[in-house]
Image 1 (tube, helix red, strand yellow):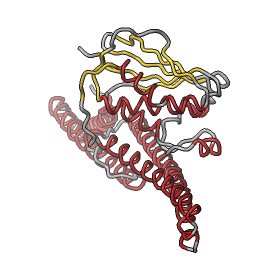
Image 2 (tube, rainbow, N blue to C red):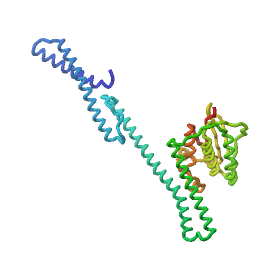
Image 3 (cartoon, one colour):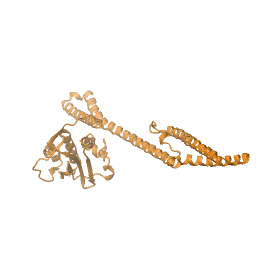
Image 4 (cartoon, rainbow, N blue to C red):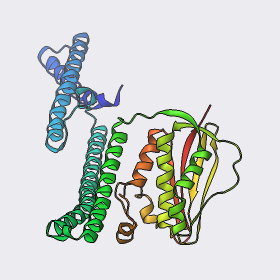
Length: 344
């Protein structure tokens, strides 16, 4: 006997006992004779009829009442409520209603988080775009106001306006890339390549920036044999460039940035990039891969960049179905790591 039928079963049993007792008393009073076979048949008929009516009428009543509650409090269409999910057992019913309330509370909390993220994101986008736009506008207004006749000022302001426009283009391109990665429209060209050679090329590319801050870019050891991986070389190169650029920007003067490559599993390598910078507070570590998120607003603005580098890193690595990690200790530096698929 299912638990959901207990209410109807007990109610029908009480009705049957009462009706059976009344029928016996009336029959004996009127005829001074009792037909037990007829009485039992009548009692059984009453029990079945009562059970069916109580079970399905109560179920229908509860269903309609719950549906009205769902309709009143639900923020989305009800698609999973059906007669089969409704029970006449009050304990089970209470659990179902409680679960529904908890699910809706969670849904509301997620909507609030998304709304807060949306406001923060729009504020960051407007700030990132506003700064170079106003800078370019200021230079052009100065030139149009008569400064264009001075060759020295004209060349200087046009060069600065061009730098501002390049930053705008960089932000728009980075946003477009993230959008393509999130929507799955960026087709990856998966090929075999040597990750050691790629990192060496990036070291050479960023050597000038590193020397300006007296930072040494190095491997943790000599890698004298190729380490072959499977991936989109261009995108992985962008990941390496973004991470090493960050380590240079936020690393300490006269420090060392070290790259190591190790086995992560039978089918994966893991690349560690460690700097000797100021480190990232633990409260900020979980958000550093968000778009435009900056740990220190003023210091980050001075360093330049679109604020999208780590977000792009995360999306590119996840597009390869790999993982990216970040560990940091304030005052000692940070380590960014990502996995790559071994070439089979």
